[in-house]
Structures are given as structure tokens and as C-alpha cells.
Amino acid sequence: MHTPLNSRGFHSKMKLITDKQFEAVDNCLTYNIPFALFALPGHKECRFFASRPDKDGECHAFADDDNIKADGCDTFFISRFNADEPYVAGIRPEYDENTLSDLIAELKDIYPASDVRPLRMSTRRESYSAAFIKMRHRLRTHGGKVVLSRHESIFSTRYITEVVDEYIASAPDTFRYFCYTPETGLWFGATPELLLSADAAGNTFRTMALAGTQSAGSDADWDDKNLLEHRYVADYITHSLSNLGLTVDASPMEELYTGAVKHLCTPISATGHADPIEVIDTLSPTPAVAGIPVDVAIAEIDTLESHRRQCYAGVVGVRIDNCIYAFVNLRCAFAAFGVFGTDGGWIYNLYAGGGIMPDSVEEDEWKETADKTAVLSSIITDCNPSMTRVYDLRDGEFIQYQGSKA
Image 1 (cartoon, rainbow, N blue to C red):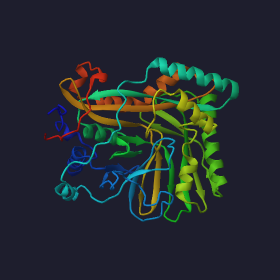
Image 2 (cartoon, rainbow, N blue to C red):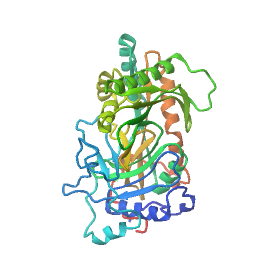
Image 3 (spheres, rainbow, N blue to C red):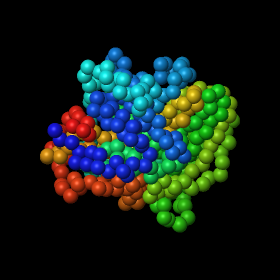
Image 4 (cartoon, rainbow, N blue to C red):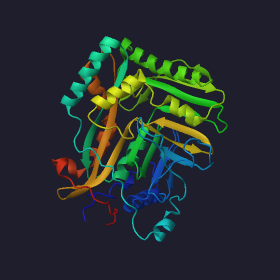
């Protein structure tokens, strides 16, 4: 059996995930049990949910996808970017790390594995360049903004939960999560961008405009390109909330530091009565991850990006005590277990994007995406024996993970 070379060797480095949660995650990966591990911004402990898929092998987040209040159960939820259908995958707290053994004892076999597979090769610079040139040409003629993303594919024999724990511990002010559903496959992330928080009554809402990027160490003034990019997003959000009949208040613009980069951020609040699902659907995707005009930008993304975003730039979050905490799924990665040569390990797809404006410089935009994945990339490759070897990811075989004790 091929297993990661150091499946538990660095458990002493764990920062946030408890030993019991570590074991529960490993069992979920072994038996393909849907699970979610998450921590809200500022929280120092993770919560663990696990639940069985339904008879169709799916994990619906809500009993009624059209009404988030159709039931009162706590829920972790995740959706794809600009999905064609309003379907949201999710995990309920049917089991926690202390009761998961009850489910495993009942299982006669493992659940069917997800058929979502990783991208084996990173985005080619030539593909990115071709998309960038076409986007910028259109923008110089018609104006607006388009967010161009790319992905980086990395193979590592380091155990995935160690990678996740070190990553989420490095970003305490973000929404951090690690989840698996049959519909989405295995994802994790540490996203700084709040899409919506809503109180249980659905009368008070918070969100933010997060756009415009510089290196975290830069002391340069914000240029017109970044300021305009940020204004597009702030105006879109405030107008969208106002059109729902809410009273909107935008706070002064500030800087928000996230790893190797910093962003312009405008906190926005709103009051009034609205269905949180309707608000989320209205706001997502925002110009921060799509562009402006949104419909034109999405069409261009679908046509010119060399990959499907899957859950990157979609929505991820939780409902706790009927309060909603939804985030844009940024600084995230998809992962799948596989064998490459004689080594078993995990292939990761790390996603990042940047807003293309009429005066954008390709080299600057490419570097921005590299800066956004730098922290996670370094964690994946740290203490990783596989990085001393060269792998052709096209030759790998994706197989069922059989547990760290196999």
C-alpha cells in the first residue's frame, strides 16, 4: 500500500486541530465520509461536523435550498463559482469527533469516492498571457474589469491534515475550513473575504468590499488602478444591498493584511429585513472575483480561463444558531490522494486570481497571483521528502486513500 511518507511524523507541529479531530478526519478520508472542520475568524478552536450522504449519494446543505431558514440545524456549506444550478453542498453535525466511531461501526463498506479530479498541470504562462491580452484589449475599448485566475499543481507526500493545520494556524483572522463532500471533493482554505454575516432575525447584515492588492511589505501609495478596482466592488455591493430595500452604511476604506499581500477593504453594514439566501445570491459573485459588468466578466472567464474554478471564488461558510457567516472562497486549494511512481501522497490545486484593468501590467498581475499562493505553497513543500524528486503529474494514478495506519 502506498501511503504518505510522513503521515503522522509531524503531528507535534499541529496548532489548531486536536488529536481527536486529526483521527476523525483521517477516518473520514479513509471511508469517504462527508465532513467539515472549520473555525470562524478569531476563534482558536475548530469545530468538526460529519454526516452521511443521502440515498442519492449527495449532501444538500439545506432541507430547502430556496429558504435557509427551512430548518434550524447548524450547517457547513460550500458552493461552486457561478454554478448553473442553485445547489449548495453541505455537512450537518450528525456526528462529531467523539461520535464518528458510531458511524464507522455501522458501515458495511466505504462510501463511493468523489469523481472530482485535480488538475495535474499548473496553468501555463502562455495560456495566462493569451487570456490576459484578450481581456485587456477588450477593457481598453469598453472599460470595466475582469478577474483572471490561475492554478498551481503541487504533489506532496506530507500528510494533508498537517498541511491544513499549519496553514489555517497561520491565518487566525480568516475563515478557515477543511471539508469533503461527494459533489465537491476535498477542499480547504483560509479566506479573508466576508461575503455576508446575518443575525438570526435577518435584520442586520455585514459584508465588505475587498479589492486592490499590494505586497504586504510595500509602503507605496495606492495607485489609480487599485483604487478604481476597489471602487467598482464597493459601489456594486452598496447598490445591490440598496436594491434589496436595505439601509446601507459604508465605513472608511482601510488596509487588510493577508499573508504576503495586503488589500483595500471597505467594511459595509446594512439593516432592514431580507432573506440571507437572497442577499448571498445577489452579491455572489462580486466584481472582486468576477469583474464589472459582472455578466460580461463571467462570460469572458468561462471562455478564456484554461480551467474550471470549481469551488474557488464560490461561497463557503456556516449557519450557527441560525446566524449566517458566508465567505468568498479564496486562498483555497483542492486536493486528492494519488500514487506517483512509488510514492503515495496528495496533489494540490492552489487557486488565485487578480483583477485585470485597462492599464494592468501582465508581469505585475502574474506576480500578484504568486504572492497570494506563496504561504500555502511553502507549507505544502516544507518538511516534504517528495520535493527532492521530480514528478511528472501526468503519470499519477488516483486511488482510494486507506488511512495513515495502513
